[in-house]
Length: 202
Image (cartoon, rainbow, N blue to C red; front, side, top):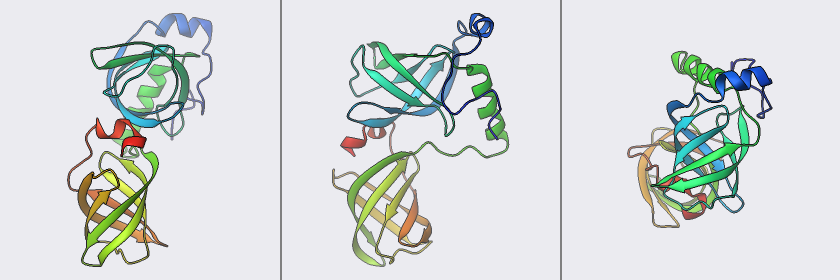
């Protein structure tokens, strides 16, 4: 379970805690979801503090732009883009978070192998090629190593499938589960970080 120090939405921390921790910038390697006015994507975070986060960004951000950052399934923070340069973007949170507690919770999840991959909800048409034939499917979510989709019931667990998205992006993988017309595909070649920075471009 996520530690009790984390709340479902970022809330102000006590002033004493803010003075103690907010200046500590912690280097990290995290995948976070950023939701913007007209798009959403998965981004690599390079560092985090109580007051903000720095992400690698190949897609353009605007200084002053409002962004919602999903740090995990249970912690999100609203913020504003403060700077963009050299392929990185700095976002200041509206309210400080307890970044130390957040990182401890990630460490606990990793040790216990309970860390779920950050996923990006999408709705994209695709064509699947497999031993079951050529079928139209709808991609419902993506992560660096996987794809969730809706199909006509023909895809079974263990089937090797090639997916061609509307954008022309192609990936192959194996169906790891399938039930009630929904399936999860484990990709043989992960999506690149740049490919997942924009749901609209997939």
